[in-house]
Image 1 (cartoon, rainbow, N blue to C red):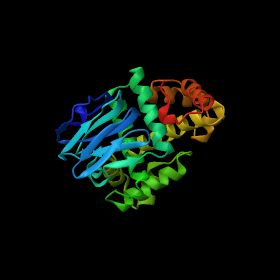
Image 2 (spheres, one colour):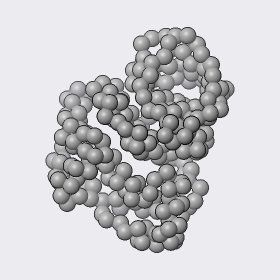
Image 3 (cartoon, rainbow, N blue to C red):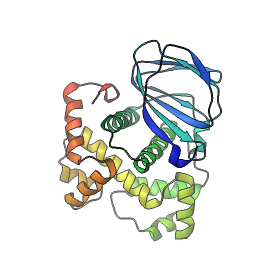
Length: 257
C-alpha cells in the first residue's frame, strides 16, 4: 500500500467471526456499537471511548453481533512505523474523542480528499502518540522543533528560527521533519493552528474573531479562508456543531451529525 492508497472510511461488521492479517496498519475508531477483537494474543473491544490499533502483519479476529459503525483507517506501514509500538487497545481521552467525532462528520459529509485525509491521519497518529505518553520520534532535534511549534504556534515562526532551536540548518530541518512527521514544519504549524481553532469553535464561546486571534491570525477573513480550505467547511459550521454538542450534553464521541 502506497500513500495514495491509504483509506479513511466508515465501516460496519457482521456477527460472523473472521480472522486475517494485512501488510498495513489499521486503526479502528468507535462511532456506534461494539466490535469484539483478538489482536495477536490480546483480547478487547472497540466501543465508546475504546479504539484498536492493528500493526501491519498482525493476525487478528473480529465479530460484531449488533448494529455497529466505525471509522477505520488503513495506514501504510512506511507512513507510520511507530504504530506497531503502541498498545493494541487504547482508551480515548477527550481530545481523541473530539477528533473521532470530527472524522465521522467529515466522512458523513463526503467533503474529504486524499490530501486532506492524509493530513487528518497524520494528526490522529500524533494525538495517539501523545495519548500514550511516549516520544516515538527517532531524532531529538526534530522533537525539540515540534515541541517549539506546539508551544508557539500562535505567532509567526521563521524557518531559520526553528532551525536554530533544533540546532540544524534549514535544509536539514526540512528534510528530517518531513521524514519523521510526514509533513514540512510549515504544514505542521498550519495543522496545529487549524486543529486548535476547530476545538475552540466546538468547545468555547469565543467569537470567530477571537478564535482567529487565539491561533495566530489577525485577519478573520484570512483565518476563515484558510480554515475553509483546510476542512472544507466554514468556521461557522463547526461553531454550530459545538452548540449542538453543548445543548445535548452528550459525550462528543456519541454525538452523530
